[in-house]
Every structure is written in C-alpha cells, then in structure tokens.
Image (cartoon, rainbow, N blue to C red; front, side):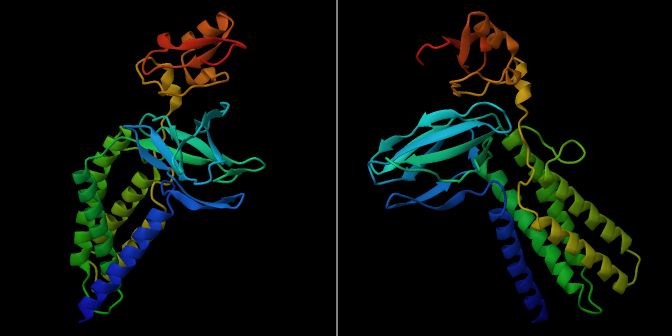
Length: 324
C-alpha cells in the first residue's frame, strides 16, 4: 500500500510540474480577451510555428467595421516595422507572417482599429514567434514518454529516500536510464529536426533546455557513483539531493533561452534568405550581403524585396515611387 501511495504522489507531482513547465515557457501561445468599441475579441497568438508554411493569424471579429493590421520585423533587429493589412473572411480577420529559417524569430503585433480606436492585442510588448523544422511524430512521442518516465522515477526515488531503511537505488537507476535516452539521445534528434543542430547547450551554445538536461544527468550520475559503497542513509541523501536537482531543473520553463537563428549568416549566399519579407523602408544592410543592397543604392533606389535564395534577384524601387 505504501508503494502505491508513493507512485501515486510521484505521478501527481510529475503531471503538475510538467504542465507548469510547458505553460510558462516562451513558446506557449498568448491567449486573452480584448475589447474594441462594444465588441469583445478573443484571441490566440502563437509563439512557435513549423516553418513548412507561413504562420496564419486568424482573429474572430464579427463587427464588419473593425479592421486589422499586422506589424512585424526580425527579432532583435533595428528594422522598421513591416505593415501588412489583414483581410476579412466572413467573421474573421486573417493575415500571415512569412516563414523563417529554423530557429528564426519574428516579433509582431496585431492591431485592431475602428473609427476612433486602435487596440494592440498584445499591448505595448510585441509577441515573439520562433519557427522550427518539422519533427516526426514518432520522435516527439518517444522523447516525451522517456522524459516523463525519467521525471516520474526521479520523484519516486526522492520520495522513497525520505523513508528510513528504504533502498531507492533501483528506481534511481531507472531514472538515469530514462533521462539519458530521452534527453541525450532523442532530445538532440529533436533538436536537429527542429533547429538544424544536435546540441546547442553548454559548452557549444546557450540553449538552456540542453544545458539543464546535462546538469540533471551529471548530478544523477555523481549521486549514484557516490552512494555505491556508502551506507543506506548516505545513499538516500545523495538520491534525495539528485531528485531535488531534477525538480529544480524541470521547474525552469521549457525552451527558455532556446536556439536562435543568427541572421548575420545571411551575408553568405550559401544560406537561405528570409522569404517573403517585403520591406517598405530601407532594410538594415548588415542583415544581407552588401552586393544587392549597394546595387539598389547606386541606382538611387531602395531595396524592395528579396527572393528565396539569391540577392541577385532582389528587386529595387525608385525612391518616392509607388510600391509594387
């Protein structure tokens, strides 16, 4: 009966912590309500999107006199905002953001306006969306199951270590096995599919998800090694400490300080150009090769847009001429 209660308590803690980690992360959608005139608007703005297609924003706005506008630009850039009017499809206002390279980020605002009022759904702070490559569902499922099992067995080991004369080593070993498979094998595989690199945590990068998984695994290995020839009391203390470290690690929001595409790479023609971004004012030349930018400037024009993979195909627009 005691074992059943320990497993039940461990399961409850696991579910609560993993749900908390998910909903507090920077990729969880922003949802809420806003009011313009006498109309209440419910919205959901995504902060993560698969880059096989543009991200479509769809807001239910039955009031026909309300119009919508999307402002967006590359995250952390000093570019002017690109303005895109939303179109009406029945009771919905619809617009889209151009897909980006894996780990590419855009910041955006959705503005709704009536005759005498303009409302930003996210307030003054833009929403940041990160694009990712598609991951096979089987890889995602295996990763989630092993990480779930690792945390469950970790918490179960920690709870059992609080009981005098208990021996939680067996469940602790299983926690390490599950964590290694889920976090160090299928985690990097998911990372590769999503963002193009197997590992972007310490020491190669600043990805906190990779780094915290490594910290938890190393602490568990140290705890098991340190307790292998110690008394049961000492072993329980090490296992309890490792379980607490695992708990703290999983309380850190998921994808915090996650992978981020370096747009300066676009200075090399081998790298893909951000697709479909039409810059109505001057594009920051540091983000693109100087060849296309300087060619337009030399002709007394400003850069109008870039195509998928070659700046030689960029279009120029005469300064002061109407947009095409």
